[in-house]
Structures are given as C-alpha cells and as structure tokens.
Image (tube, rainbow, N blue to C red):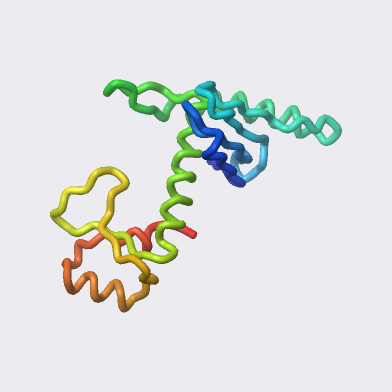
Length: 159
C-alpha cells in the first residue's frame, strides 16, 4: 500500500501548537480525500470524498479501513519509545516530510547546501555557498576541497 499526500498548503501564520495545513490524500495513486489541521494543537482530520453515484464513497471507506490496519506497522518516537501510528499521525508525518522537503527546495534555489565529511551538524544544519546555483562544476570544486564523502543537499532534494 502506498500512501502519499499532494497539494500541500501550509499556513505558517495560523500555526500555533501544530502545523496548520490542508493536503490531498492518495492511496495507491487514487485520491481518496483530504487531510487538514487547524494548527491549534488538535488532531489532523482525514475526510474521505463522498461520491455515492459512482461508488467511490464505499471504496474510499474500504481504503480507510485498510489504512487503519496498515499504518500501525510504522512507528513514531515518544520519550524514546516507539508508538504505532494512527491514520492521522501517519498523515502528519508525511506532511512534515513534504513540508521540510519544500523548505529545502526553496533554500537550494540560490545556494548550495552541503555537509562536510567528519564534521558534526545539528538536524537541519548545513554548510552553504550563498548566491550560487548548483552545477557539476560547483560539485567538482566542493569535492576537490572537502573530499568525495561530501553530502550535497541539492542533489538529493527531489523537484
């Protein structure tokens, strides 16, 4: 089973205790509904589309039931202990990953982000070259200076 989110819209200015967002939810490539969180600390709401005329509502309900059975095999960490996902917590994790990916993509537009082998970095921290577009020439220069084990974020952030 493949669960993905698309059409992510984040309203940072409305995010208080949680991320305020809306997104489309897809299961095995089929759009089955939406997910949203108002950003006030509550759970994420997952709503299925209700198209009774063509039978989508019943199939979406079945897919949602399958989701409830499927996602607990994945866990998230709470105080060092693994906790099985629920549908809403799994969707939240997908949203955060996509939100972070989009943020990295923005950062990579006009700079090169990288990590030098052997150096310590905090989560989300990188060395960078500002006002520089990534290219093979830039990569070669960085590798010459820092070695082949260099991790260049621009190469790994899917567009």
